[in-house]
Amino acid sequence: MAENVTQREPQYVGFWKRFLAFIIDSVIILLVILIAALAIYGRQYIELSGQGKTLIFDVLVQGVLPALAAILFWRYRGATPGKMLIGASIVN
Image 1 (cartoon, rainbow, N blue to C red):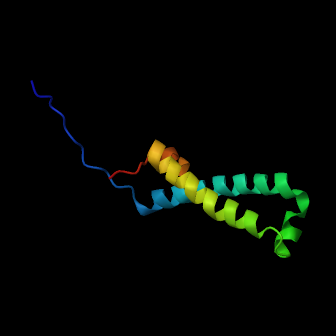
Image 2: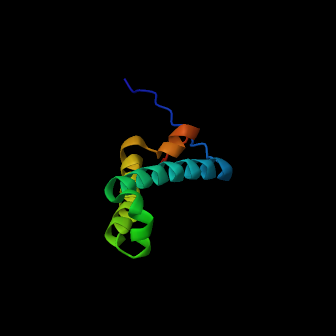
């Protein structure tokens, strides 16, 4: 007996909803980075950053970790937190 499986066509999310998801993701990442920077460097973070003393932290936390988080969310949840909040997901 064959199962009757129907596939739905994906409904594309418009630009403004995707932009809203991007803003939500950016705010979440900003808050995480700010909390991490303050936890590691304290209130001197801005001064140390201006002197170039936080370069490795900046590259790792502001570049590598957000990219890794996005990839992991895409892989295991099918969407970033912003996309989940607007009800969108990534499909093949």
